[in-house]
Image 1: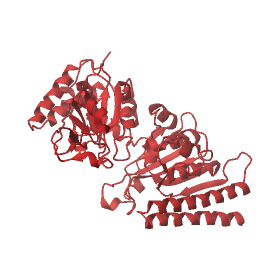
Image 2: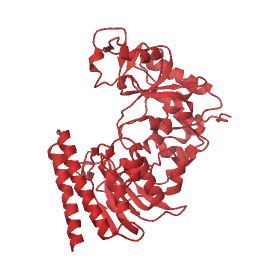
Image 3: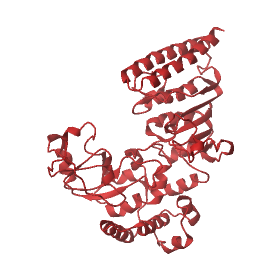
Image 4: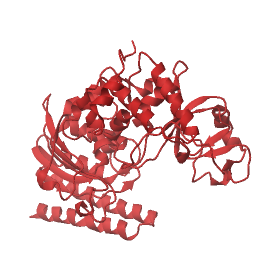
Length: 453
């Protein structure tokens, strides 16, 4: 009875902490203090339960753990890295309470106990939860994960009226997975799909091999996992061709004081200036010539580099917008990313591949938010063509036509088809990415002996 009361007290504390956060959304200090208090109380109660119900193998004590934890960022260091070696000890960046709850759902279980919670969908792909995923993939037997995007296809499908982010429900057993342990993933769900879920089957160990630097659980529909694996075959991570890759030169928020409308000769460019292939150099903003920008300015005005938008909507037609810039006397805001390739690399060979529908599709499979992060760019799978000239010729035509305001859709479509062949996709596989692709175009723009080497 004493233990039962403690459990009731424990789970009675959580809504109180959450309500404090909700009612005081702008009082950050109040939020943190309130959360710290509640977290300390929860930890004390958990320790009391563990002492009273300690098992011989030091595992948890519950058969089932169910929860809907708060999605709140808190500073690192609140929790014990010894108690939470994955979410607190190994995960990078800010801490989010939901990750600690995920790990604690594992800690509280007996062997063969079952946990299920609804949490942020960033659990599946965001780099901040990389090692929390490692825990799930290596220490548990996952049964299924159901994903619900931020915006459903219809208003009627909205799962939660007041949740403005993607969510997912996981279900696992505290049991070391078998070598070929499989589990089900279902994505793009809403209220209308719950009764008719569509699944893709994934293998836990295989995900560790496909995504060795992130342990991602991809957002795949039926029959898409095989396509991801095929795209990866004989591909090389983009990282291997990169000399440097950094956020824009200045923080557009904290560095406002050096932004001016007076023409100083040093242009300021933002994310919107970087489009697919084309760089829009029109701006009425400039940068004061101050000491902090000099190193970056010298690099920008004497090198060739890629620019791409750092923030794009998850439902945008295209997530990736790469363009090539050559020696501009300019400073770039942090809504842009600057990437320089190694000296032997030809930017105009990489550009059509990075802007292709295939790479955009691949990127979306592990992106759960609006950010286009450096680690995501680094892990794009690159195959280079044996004959570069057809790609370079089309890119030059696109750039020329865009300067004249011409529509280049047909040229970009031709590149998309050439990239499908570069990655050895069949017509059926290419249609998974590009449902409107015709068999005639697939044959018309076929490239012979596509591979480099």
